[in-house]
Image (cartoon, rainbow, N blue to C red):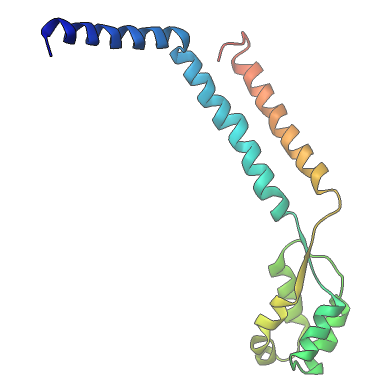
Length: 155
């Protein structure tokens, strides 16, 4: 390649980069990064993980019947009828309550996995509204912080 062709190629690449950076500035890249990190990413994470964390756990009648069919003794099942359909926000609290109701600790340990498999999850009826409230609260806090520290609108 001749020297003049190489210098023309180098000049054209520099002009292309300068022309590109004239269209998109470093401030635009910074604003886009902030938008992705502070707006888009939290929205995706909240919509993905919030509905799965807001469940109630409970033992149902069919779950107790399944325990009976799997061969669990009545001494294990009878105390659990009192817990039937009582909602618990955390699964470990429900399991703790089950453990406290069963008089024989060895029996509980033997059937612990079977009991856990019969616990059902129930979605609250207004989970979409809860998601909307949490997301709008996050956006409200974000707007307040932006107005407080960047009052002139330049981020």
